[in-house]
Length: 64
Image (spheres, rainbow, N blue to C red):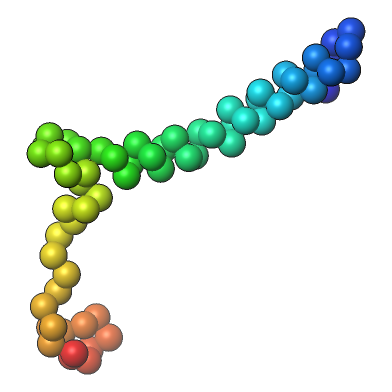
């Protein structure tokens, strides 16, 4: 804990620190979801490689 003359001031500082810490992973997720490296107006997360065609061999040795 931090030393403050009033307990409320210390609680405010603790709340700010916790909110900043909590916000960090959400900010990274937001940036990843909205990144548009080719500047075509569509976030790159929606432009991933096409899925494998139906009937293609799977990694477990079966098809379909």
